[in-house]
Image 1 (cartoon, rainbow over the protein chains, first blue to last red):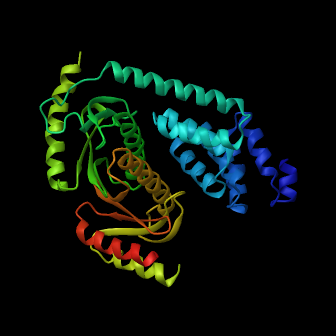
Image 2 (spheres, rainbow over the protein chains, first blue to last red):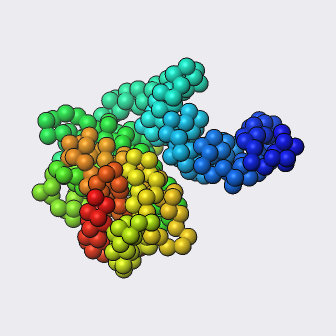
Image 3 (cartoon, rainbow over the protein chains, first blue to last red):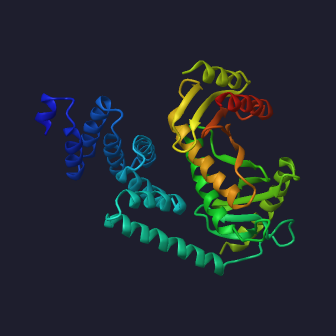
Amino acid sequence: MSAELAQNPDSLVFLDLGEVLRRRGQPYSAAKAAVAGLERHPDLADAHDLYARVLVDMGHLQQAYEEWHSTVALDPQHLGAHKGLGFLCYRWGDLDGALEHLESALAADPMDQSVVQALRMVRDAVTELTEITDEQESSVFEGLEGARHGLLMFDTRGRVLGGGMLTELGEDVSQDVAAYVAGGCQEADRSTRILEMGEWQWMIVEGAGGNMHVSRSEADTVLLVARDRSVPSGRLAILAERAAEVARQWVEEQQP
Amino acid sequence: MSEKFRRALDGITRVRGVRGALLVTSDDGLVVADAVMEGVRGGAVAALTASLAARLGKATVGAGIGEASFIHLQAEKGALLAMPAPDGVLVVVIAEKDVNVGLARLEMLQAAEAVK
């Protein structure tokens, strides 16, 4: 394959060569083949996918994540990229993201047994988290304004630890909202890392019917305060600070 | 980059403390147009911000407060702002920590209108 590539540098044989090298446990040689291929074929989704897999072998997960994002941008149904992104999201505790990508992978190839198994594993993890959360339902914020309908504390995997989130109709959406925001927090981590901005401190999200304030709290927990638009963002930040103080005490009490 | 997009982004980058502005497709995070300082990894920021906005948008819809119309992420050494524009485009701004968010937001609104 190397000879073929030397004879015809534009050949796509670098894809097979890179794959063989990585399977042989030669990630640096595989990376060289992938990068050389990418220089000649920057818009080839499979080339980005190959490079991402090599990067995973080398332990460069963040770069692999970006490469797979490039793959999906070039080919939104790329099976390998969705499998890879699903794996990384699961590894980073982003179950929502893992489900999303694995479902896309399954749509790309419904017969792929590795995807079916991975999806089963992630769905089991989601169920397990939900059960733990139900058992641990607590009233951490009892006494605080909106403690059971607009104040939520959860961990970085989206597991609700306290408070609650109800819609105007009284529907409990705590789990869903915590899962989405936990995924968002992971993207916030990656964005600030790439931009060398240090750690993110808080986020305000404005919607047509209200605002959300998301902040970091103790021991890798996240606090979310949501109110309708009659409550200005500044007031929301004050509520979040009060809730953070209560959460801090609660976390201390949980320490052995 | 088309003149229309360039002008839209110029207004934002003139705001003191803004390090860059991008127009990004909100569904897949591709850069439509950008005006960022050297060293800023525009492509990666675009992909991650689009994903961040999508997740937070799902959260606001799930919580019953509607689609996200503005996102402000504050970090130790900077800020990231995002606002949806028509036709599935997102206006993204990378800024210093103490940027005048109100001013940046006004320019983002104008840029969003210019995308139409």
